Length: 255
Image (cartoon, rainbow, N blue to C red; front, side, top):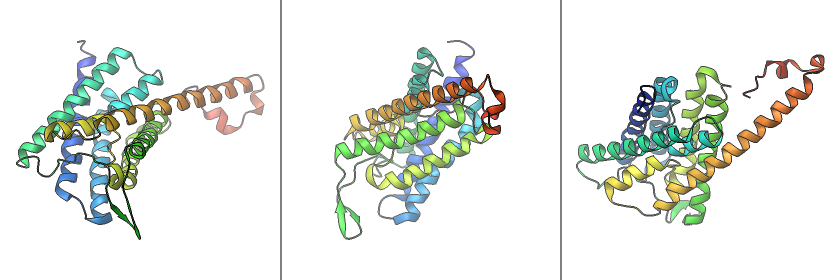
């Protein structure tokens, strides 16, 4: 392992560990049936954790803390396969260690440790809703798509500059407010796998591991396609620079 790679892997381990310990811990402590205030608390616990550690470790590793984000960045051509594999292993280990420590400090797995689960007989107005595995797959994939789109557009493309962690943390928060009651809103294989290992509950594990990867790849494909279109537009305008608008002139090829 090179001296340049080790700090990145450690940063990804610590950030993912913190996400599971704080986010999963909040879900375990707040529990179910607490309405919007409790859901908001869980959402902000996740969002603020990612935001804080992205500010701390973004310059070191990019602050992924999520295998699906790493896959999206890889699919967008912004990192190497070997480096991405190291990130994913570090994230998964960080998630498992975070969940195991959470189980130890909470005295066992009775709280569920924030393990995501599909909703059954969820009360919505005058009806109840049960989320099927197919619907859960779509929800998790879409939430991962949103997160990876924001990561690629702000952190990777550099459009938000130093505010990228804020945008990423808020996206995480909004995703959980919407998807939390439906699927647990993990949209992160490490966030799902850690508590599953610690509790021994692997219900719908395939969904929580695969769906975020699918959403991330779709986000990367669209990101690359939009980048090509913008670059072609800039290139077409080059001979007649007078025809370019101020907004076009301010764009960089990375956009």
